Each structure stands twice: as structure tokens, then as C-alpha cells.
Image (cartoon, helix red, strand yellow):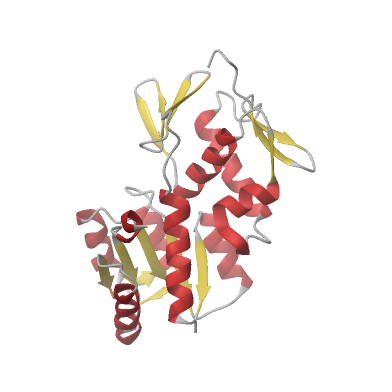
Length: 235
């Protein structure tokens, strides 16, 4: 738990009072490495200078929006993201989750709940990895320490959600992992309704680890049940 609380968190919101409130609440809970920004441009500068472990992004920002900022951050960081918004429309939520967000919190919210959601995302993302840090799948090698896929001379980064899903599948290799179990691992107790988002992450994972994503030989769909990571003894 101490390792989790040493992670760097960047909160981006144009409400100064809310920024200070969230910073204070996280500080009271033992998180001491908090960075704040009120706009996209400053947030990007901080993100590039610091090794941020979790981004908390407001959707509405004075010089852009959280979704566009997310896309910019993804160009150089695969750390998890939580979206904050005053709007509770389903379209916003689906947009955020479709991009690969790890959580979505609608204002107003309790600061104690915010800390719990932050802690949950950090725990799911940064829990200790499996001792064997390399997974050989056909012509690719997945490194669990760096959360990346090595293919020839290329190193392809995995997002936080892809990493969690792949670890869960590998922990149960050659066995079926249900949709519910994968959603629970990736999104926690409030995972209901994430099945379609799970399919998006599985598709993106296949694009990174399969030789032919349209004909997967490792991440296999088991209709009506879930998915299975097939790994042979020779791999």
C-alpha cells in the first residue's frame, strides 16, 4: 500500500477550489505526490516532465477538453486515467470508456469516494506482477515488467487496461476467464455495463499480440462465456 501512495497523481480541472479540496483530501489519505493544472497546455507540460502514475482529467477545460487531452497524453504515457465531469450524459461516459479510461466520476461527488476510486485504480494497475516477466506468444514477447510487447525491433506499449486484462488471462492461461471476471479485474466492483468496453480492449490487445488479429490463435473467444489465453508448452 505504501508503494501505491508514492505514485504521482496529476489532477486537471479549471475549478481552483475543487483542485485544492481534492489535493488536501488525497494528502490527508497519505498521497503526497500530487500535481495540479487548470488547463490542457500546462497539464501536458507537467505530464512530460514528471512520471505521472495516474491522470485525473476534467472533461470541460478552458483551452480544450479532457478527451483531446487524453489523446495527447497517450502519445507518450500509458498510465491510467479517470475522467471528471459535471455532465452525466451517457454519450460522455461512453466516449471516455471507449477511449480506454479506467474510471468516470460525475460531479458532484464525495471527496471520500474520490479517494477510494483513485486508490482502487492504482491498486488494480500497479499490483505486483507475476514472477515470470516474459510471455512468449508466437513471434511476440510480452514483458510484464515494462507492460510492453516486443516484436522484432519494435516495442509496443500496453495501456493500463490492456495490461490488467492480459495479466488476468495469463494467470488463468489455457482456461476460460468469464466476462464478469475480466471486467471485475479491470474496473472493480462497479463493472456492470462494461462488457462492450471489454470487447474494445480485447480487439486492441489482439492487434498488438496476434500475428493475424482477424484470426486470433492466442486470445480466443468462448461464446457466451468469456475469453481464453492459449499458450503452448513450447512458448
